[in-house]
Image (cartoon, rainbow, N blue to C red; front, top):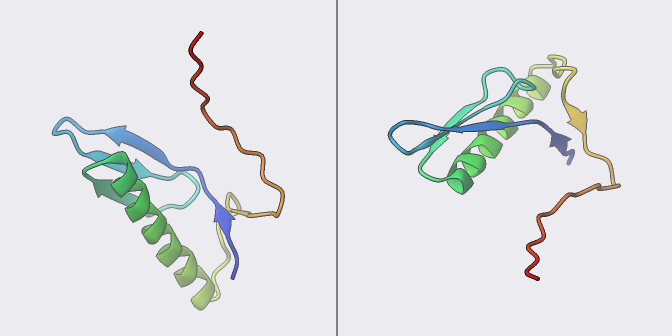
Length: 81
């Protein structure tokens, strides 16, 4: 099993739902009622697109980064003083 890192942009639509797209993976479009739901759908769409590239022997978009074992993670920390 391989993992890939992609950049996903999420925007809020006028009717209150959310839309996800990716410049890294053309064809990735996902819509959901919440940001979390939209991310979950986007991950599923991305997985299916990448699997399709691999199954058909097509080269992956060069923007895709295969995930490495070292993680640099930024997390929000709320501090009250």
